[in-house]
Amino acid sequence: MASGQEFQGRWALVTGASAGIGAALARELAGRGAKLILSARRRERLEALQAELAGRGIETRIVVADLNDAAAPQQIFDATAGAGLAVDILVNNAGLGHYGEFYLTEPEQEFSQVRVNCEAVVRLARHFVPLMVERRRGWVLIVASTASFQPVPYISTYAATKVFDRFFALGLAEEVARFGVRVTALCPGTTESEFFDVAGAQRFKGRDLQSAEEVARRGVDALVRGKRLLIPRLDRRFAAFLVRFVPVRLITRVVDRMARPKPDPAR
Image (cartoon, rainbow, N blue to C red; front, top):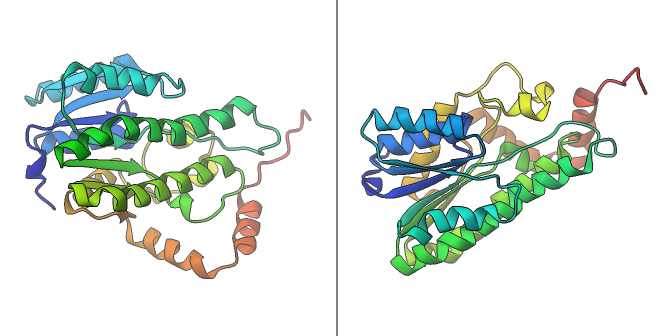
């Protein structure tokens, strides 16, 4: 495990910190000496995590914000860097998905995925990265997904937004490396979290889940080492490599057969 001593005493902002991978990332960073800014929609969960970290002697602040609102990134910035905190570590973890046939889903469900998974990531990076460049130090972790390596029917929008996240992270990493800023795209596979229940995507959940704690540990290790892309599990790395050689039409056809929603008798 990389020591992460570079994080000692530095402020880390984690979005989507109320549960799952976000909460695990916050705990992992705290374990490496970082001070935490926790952001999400659910105040009570943030306060519970804040109390837990305070019990470990970790200085923690909360910013309640809904990244589905285009004004939220500015709100988060104003409450942190705008208030004089030097945010050296930005973790763009907040995200959402939705399972179902695209032509039947509520339009707002699809638009929200683009706003939270893509637009908010860019807005937050645009707020904080220039200050990192100016200081000649900084770390940015962008949580993408193994879904970003191929189209995935019935979570088509989600998979596409994660392609955006992965490519944005890789391009940004090259741009800012010469300024001492490290950017990592973290691409977990199926992970123990509430994501699948919230997205209604239990069909993609499977039984062999990686723990959020392991994903967080490996992700932060990669960030410390300056690794630009991490798939935190060997079999998922192999699958991501393999799909390069499989026709996309074959992949989508197989997924369609496995994941197609059952007909609604009410229709």
